Image (cartoon, rainbow, N blue to C red; front, side, top):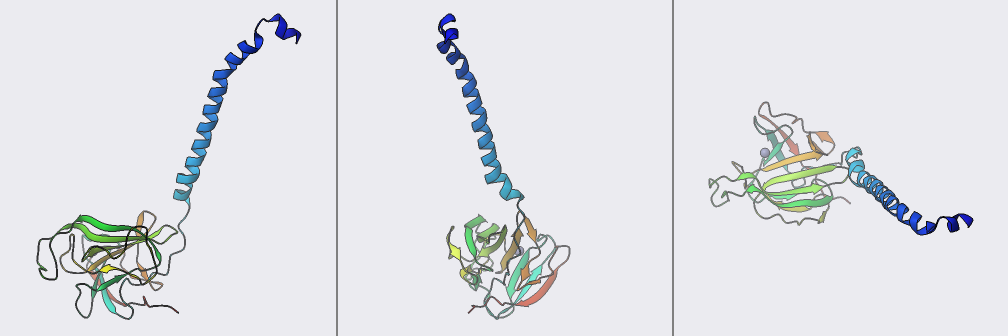
Length: 218
Ligand SMILES: [Zn+2]
């Protein structure tokens, strides 16, 4: 008490000097908190390892045999699917595994290749396409669909749900399904029903036949 009396207006004086320091400290603390939140929300999920590989199935109807193939200039791990029997145009394209649709739209340009005009102008990119997030950093994508996908962004799909119809939109020579499996940012070798497709690079033309076990369960 004695001190406050002898120094005139000490409380006011000290208060003024402390103000900016307190503000600075507050800014630093808030900055640190914001940085920690950013690390928790953005960085940690990026560093977290991918989950186990989902039990993907061929994206085509149960029991059908399809040809899986690649060719030089395609891209490593990319798979093109053609039916071994019946008309390719309009065939159901199914979800390989349950997940959430993250893309359902147009990649590049559609071009003009249709069942009525199969030699029409070629488009660019993937044409009508769908991407599904299966959780655990696993994704699948389905390109060159015939028409606007049958699913919407944000929609939950079950394994075997039809997501579109096979077509030849985008940069496609003939009706087929271009298909990829991804873990994080990288494409990986496609697995179906627990076994690898064997398509790991596009150095040479390669085809293999597989039967779809994308069958209703229960
Ligand atoms: Zn392809």
